[in-house]
Amino acid sequence: PAPKAASLSVQGVGRRFAGLVALEDVSFAVRPGLVTGLIGPNGAGKSTLINAISGVVPPSSGKVLLNGTDTAQIPVHEVPANGLGRTFQNIRLFRNLTVLENVTVAADAVACPGEDSRAAAMAALTVVGMQDLAARPASSLPYGAQRRLEIARALALRPSFLLLDEPAAGMNPAETDALIAVLRQIRADHEIGLLVVEHDLKLIMRLCDHIVVLNKGQMIAEGTPEAIRANPAVIEAYIGK
Ligand code: ADP
Ligand code: MG
Image 1 (cartoon, helix red, strand yellow):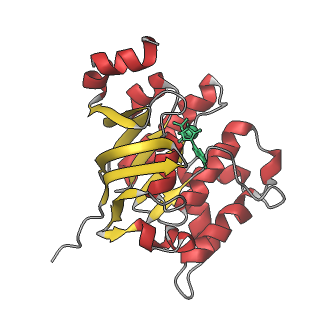
Image 2 (cartoon, rainbow, N blue to C red; image 1 turned 135 degrees about the vertical axis):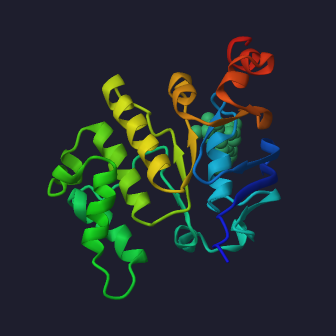
């Protein structure tokens, strides 16, 4: 039989911090081979949701199923090996290692015995267009390239799903265009399901197949970019305050 497709579904997820309701009853699926956008005003709960999905901050109610397994039951350091990769809102690189070394660390973690993890790391660097920068110290890269390096490192873990928290934050328009091209390439070449949190609505509208909208911890809409753009509740959340 054909291998079962990977699946990632958020089921009634809620999260409280003391008295604060950061997320309430959020449900949607991240589809393999598609880009799902997660948008909402500041404080809407986007990062909390990424943390809940990746098991960093488990939900206080509901659950997230990764290939049928509740991610809260997977030790945090084993989540990537289970097919769920992510990047963080703030860059987390080994600044004193080279570009290639940063990615090789990740490739090593999933390499089969005898496999050349440096070659696997180079392949991931090629996906993000950074093969010529392999020998550079990570700290010497321009900002946009550091963010692409984080994506290469996450890719080297061979994820089924990749969660990106504000990947274009701080990028100039040329860097943003390069990022969009990379994410489109990842969607085209791999059956990876991407979940992209982003402030830049133009980027989201250009890139995403499906969009989920959070406001004050509640999921207020989901649908195609066209449907989201025309949704009165979404317009209200962004403009009507
Ligand atoms: P977003 O990423 O959409 O800007 P966050 O998920 O970071 O929003 O935050 C949602 C809400 O939860 C905010 O009110 C924030 O202050 C609160 N919050 C997030 N993390 C914590 C935490 N660890 N402790 C207390 N409150 C938190
Ligand atoms: Mg955030």
